[in-house]
Length: 249
Image (cartoon, rainbow, N blue to C red):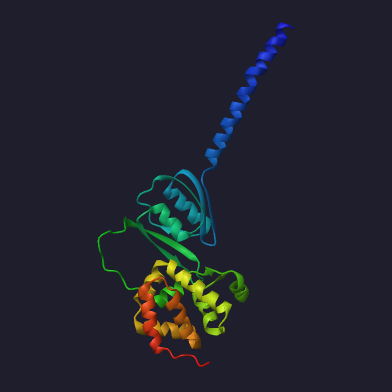
């Protein structure tokens, strides 16, 4: 074997590991350049991020969802997070912690603006504004529906007030039960609606049941009394039922 052959072999042994090392370094650099992945679909957020400032993630959410953001994050910090299809209100809360914010919706029910307040939520007891359940119901963003409800409406998202039309218009059966179940689930998961339902007076509750239940108002009341998780709501509904006539079989 000649000295040239030996030298060539040693060059190959030394060079190949160096090529692999260079490839690995380039892959790491590409991963760093790529940055966080943020997607917003139907006001549900998916994020994969490593050591990314929360303020930057909020900016990306706004850009993806065509949402205006006013104010600033008071405690922006690098975070490593990963979640999928989280409602945008919950996603913002995860990112900014206890900082207060409001969300404004357009006439079409789509989210238009998130306003960040400059100070965190006060922990001291404070007087709370009463919640008008009917108003909160009308301004709630459209909700997702599936199965028979989707076939009934011909689309996958409907307003809560429109969902209640099924309760008013449909005879007793699986479709009406599904509509009432979906309605109650949304109310109990939304802080404002949940509080508004709990704080309604008996007269307001009777008005709500008559407006959205029509001739099926008592059936809607019976369902709420049986299925509501909040004992105070069940008690209020039971009292309101005395003002609702029984349906004639």
